[in-house]
Image 1: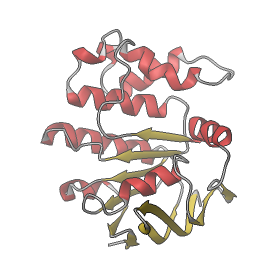
Image 2 (image 1 turned 135 degrees about the horizontal axis):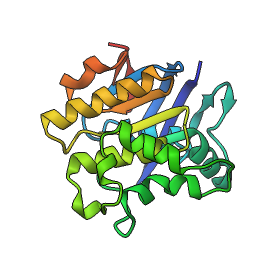
Image 3 (image 1 turned 120 degrees about the horizontal axis):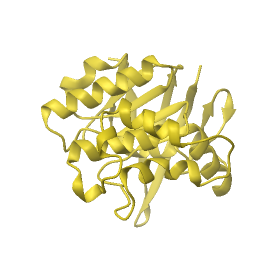
Length: 222
């Protein structure tokens, strides 16, 4: 077992009311599984990913990673855990414009002191995602699909056990969407746990399990 979520809830204040973004979510994802989570905008999918990544703190419930609770870490502990254990492909373009593709990919490695050499790994990842020839290019010179591939390589640079992706193909054409989803399948087959939030039903066949979220409640697998 890699990830276990028990009775997870998250509320937000809306005026004088408390509104549930998530309510009593339970989920188990094993090592190397590729899980899709579908649902309409505003259903709570992104909130769930942000809770898993430690960017938000749950109102109730617990998140376990390899049987260790990660749901109420301090900011510093959460940041370190996220850097070491989680790769996160966020919506939109999160590239730093003044860095090359290679420098963007290496950035998470450099945030904390660690042993080892990053150069060879970065080059291998760029080869894996199909943009090795763009190593020295800048984000402004890339297409949307190439930016997404760079983001995936960056998310994998620290060899995380868990890869989270929030609508990773939302702004891509059909060909790039298929290639990105095949890449996630390959990553899961290599042993990384993968959770993808998507509304594109035609991509679900690449995953092992699909869950549905509606009004903050998770159901499935379907």
